Image 1 (cartoon, helix red, strand yellow):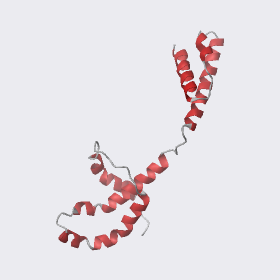
Image 2 (tube, helix red, strand yellow):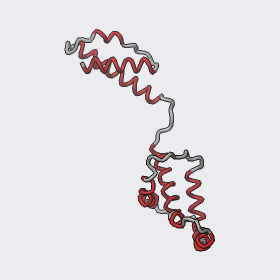
Image 3 (cartoon, rainbow, N blue to C red):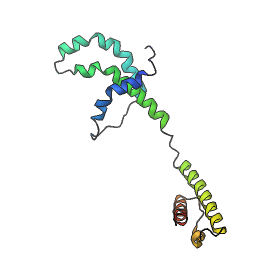
Image 4 (cartoon, helix red, strand yellow):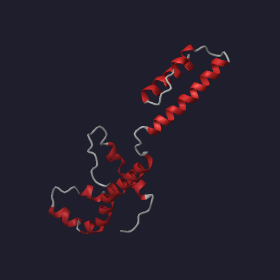
Length: 152
């Protein structure tokens, strides 16, 4: 199979966008095949399939030739979309990165609140209610309490 132009996937996706938009609200099935392998298989077989197109149209009366003619666009759009999703979706980390970010934010907000209390800008005796734990519930409690203290 010859390599495709890197912009061809984006262009193919644009050509099939109206069909995809019509799927909005319809239940979709989770993909259970390797999208890149499926796309590569279709693109590799396409020259042979195109060679028998007229025979398919003649012998299969209910054959949807318009869908057949868009097969390359579907394969390129699938490949492009799959590559885009794989590069944009962060790997699952079981919440570790969220917990780290929440801890960093809690520490920064707690320090800000303490400085404001020391300067007399705010009076927040409830600062003593901060738990300081590493569990998600302690983090959520502390962040909500700090939000209320600093919002008030």
